[in-house]
Image (tube, rainbow, N blue to C red; front, side):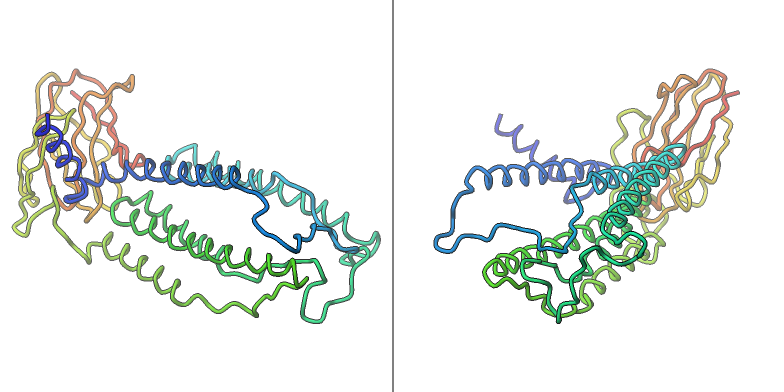
Amino acid sequence: MIEELVNGIVDWSQQFIVPDWGELVGLIPLALAALGLLYLAWIVYRFATAGPTRRGRRRLAPVTPAGIHMPGPSFAPLLAAVGAFFLVFGVVAGGIWLAVGALILVVTLLYWGREEMRNFDHATVPGQAGVAAGALPAPAGTPPVGVHIPPPSFRPLLVAIAATMLVAGLVLGGWVLLFGFAAVVLTLLGWLWDARKEYAATERADATGHLDLGGAPAWPIATFAVLAILVALGIAVTSGILGGSSEGTATASGAPVASAPAGGGGAPTEAPSTAVDADVVITASGIQWVETAITAPAGTPFTLALDNQDNGVPHDVVISDGSGNVVFETEIITGPTVKVYDVPALPAGQYSFVCTVHPNMTGTVTAQ
């Protein structure tokens, strides 16, 4: 029993020592879910233990000063976030979902814009556009007493750049996805750090009646440099400038390293990347299929070569019949490499094939 436990731990750790990108990427949602659950548990704990932790002067009750018009609560930011989620889902899924996601985002943003227009109309003097009703005179460098305004910040821009990198990683996969995820974590931690400092300054302002903005923020040169390095690394890895060998990639002599067979496909055999000895060849280049319509012999087994020419990018081939049932699938291999598989006999007819890592890569197979 102990030997089985040790073997299980060793097998599980191999995906981190010699990464299988398909398995590693599949763990990202689980890691995010675990972090989310830990954060919710921390919030519940904080609420459960909240109480009068300070003694002496009580905290000032938040009262809106005269002449300051605060907007009411709104669901618009939540709806816009839902719209952004559907847009990202459409970018990954492709097809009609991209148009649906863009439409949902546009509708939610239009709703937000209309709500802000109503707030503006309510806060201005009728017949005098741009003049706030009961407007206060311009303060001399500080907000009015009781008004706490956070300082300007570059954080939303940085998070937007990192989110763009993450979306690019979802499309390209491999190291690019890892770099995008690291960029999002880095920028969100920076935003959380700034928010914590703003909260502490607001607590001090409850006693002083004044929030020290600290002047204009400095340019986040260090964060910009880190994001630029991550983008450069992603471009270099995707374009093949930074090569590397791992399980299933081609060696310097052009012959790929053999790896374990896929659960749903035939056993792979080694084949040179320059001359492929197979009945059918499917080539991946530039995150797309070179051959989108192929012909295979009907009623007899044949060999299929998957030629992955994308450096550092994983691909596979899954063939389905007209009803959507999978009739053959390869393992996920990271390029550049070539693997040859034995495909069982297929009845005559039309079939479709797709890369499950990049669902936008599709094609047809005609068995005749």
